[in-house]
Image (cartoon, rainbow, N blue to C red):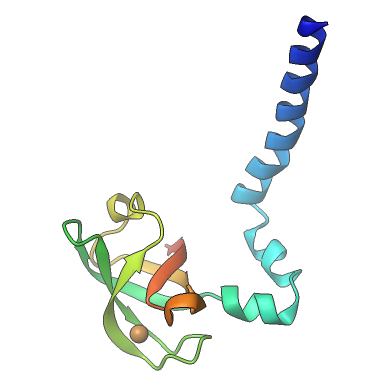
Length: 115
Ligand SMILES: [Cu+2]
């Protein structure tokens, strides 16, 4: 009985994790456009370029264009939802990013590297 339960759990985890991987790789945009307009605007990505990465403060300074949340073009320091992004970003990197409306758009909640 115990063996059967473990097997069932393993199968379940396998089935659940496959679509998650597919979504990370390919369907970020489609998933976003499929959302309701209100959610889509909160999650909408704006264009920016990394000017400075401050690992001590855990912030990244971005020069950005006009953002979907209404912020005009400017250069400012953002907090990051995921500190691991500090290692992915460097000055000069162009990105698309989303911010958290809950704190006035001062925290980056999603980043996409632009080649
Ligand atoms: Cu700004």
